[in-house]
Amino acid sequence: MLYHPDKHRDPELKSQAERLFNLVHQAYEVLSDPQTRAIYDIYGKRGLEMEGWEVVERRRTPAEIREEFERLQREREERRLQQRTNPKGTISVGIDATDLFDRYEEEYEDVSGSGFPQIEINKMHISQSIEAPLTATDTAILSGSLSTQNGNGGGSINFALRRVTSAKGWGELEFGAGDLQGPLFGLKLFRNLTPRCFVTTNCALQFSSRGIRPGLTTVLARNLDRNTVGYLQWRWGIQSAMNTSIVRDTKTSHFTVALQLGIPHSFALISYQHKFQDDDQTRVKGSLKAGFFGTVVEYGAERKISRHSVLGAAVSVGVPQGVSLKVKLNRASQTYFFPVHLTDQLLPSAVFYATVGPLVVYFALHRLVIKPYLRAQKEKELEKQRESTATDILQKKQEAEAAVRLMQESVRRIIEAEESRMGLIIVNAWYGKFVNDKSKKSEKVKVIDVTVPLQCLVKDSKLILTEASKAGLPGFYDPCVGEEKNLKVLYQFRGVLHQVMALDNEALRIPKQSHRIDTDG
Image (cartoon, rainbow, N blue to C red; front, side, top):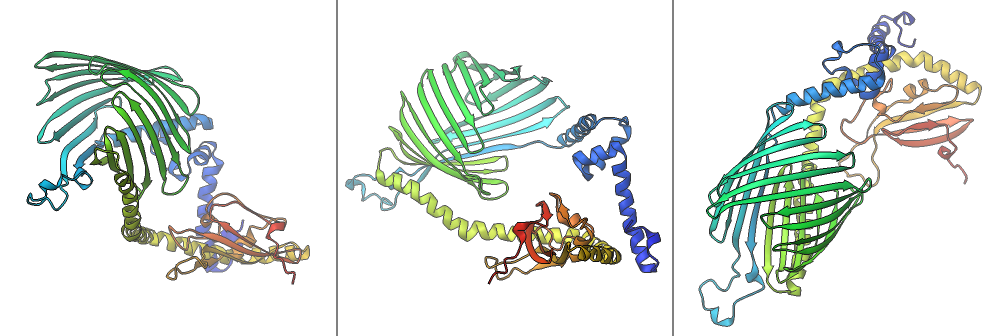
């Protein structure tokens, strides 16, 4: 009714009203049709833009429409999968730094170069794999690896074909060959036995100069509760063993206890990881592992340093292994691992430097390199986002300004009605980015006056805004794309001033007693 062209005689206002009325009409067409309304309620505008709705039978329930949307989405995802190879890789570089703490005796000091600790790379491992979807159920996997240790090494290449047989299981055939080992033939099977229980079986035949070496690994797992899974593993052939473990994973912690009896290793393991609920997804972990090989205590932490990167470090202290520092960087689907062996003995100095050194280096890099880089990247993305949306924002601004002009007469009548009963009067309202004492000096206020649009939404001395971005309200637009926004309202109710500040996506209901401005004194 507010935007109907017939209600406006001024040619300019009439033109603006026609443009806004067309937008309202488009919304009405969507919301008045049960099918398109159900699509919009569940998936928003992106659901309406999905290809394929024209062949969907009408008069379907929202649940049926959801299923149909998910089917169309799966088909689109399958088309995208055809173009993806999903590469995964690992690079591991072992470093021998024992000369830092275990120096040779004095008689070797005359050897050339002995004045400086000798740090060497004593082993390396590189592996890479790619996946190629052939059909909706078949995937080909090609992987390879190269390893070297103390000057000796080798490599292998594997090809696997995986088929999803049903919603409950899949199977995989694997063929491999290497320069140190002969051909390898393997078969993997996965099957959900019940909704809470599954089994995995892996059979392999390894051909070598010493003959055929068969191997069989079976894992039975069961969900003990929503966050806990129990595993039973039996391995026969190559390194035979029986293993049982319980893993509990919650929003704030990850706990594992395991026991293995086998040849050549038998051990007991207990580990705990605490997950902090912060933006950097910080995790602190510790574990104790004891067996025939000795005892190892490990502790460490990991933290997200960018959108796709996670940096972690752990200190391993054991008998007879000594002290090691393990640094790991996960970048998307690539893993970079650097185990640094510091000493074969339990030296307090090695434990101290392995613990404190990475912390000092991390905080220095975080402050001097990572934070400035991320800040520059964020500014660059914001600037790019502003440029890409500049035309759209300008259009939204013009529509908002036109809507405010069309609201003037209606708002005047609302204010007269509210004043007559000492009701709700919006004195001032601003929307956008505000600055405070903690803000940087370079930051500027970016707000727009939304007093008229908010007053227009007042009905029976009440204003109710739902949990959604307020940039979509009539008479509003986004004055600072990609930045945090608030709505600040100064209003009068029953002759008393009130004030409230709300987040962009926060629901707001006024008047409220808690918004009242205390004028005592």
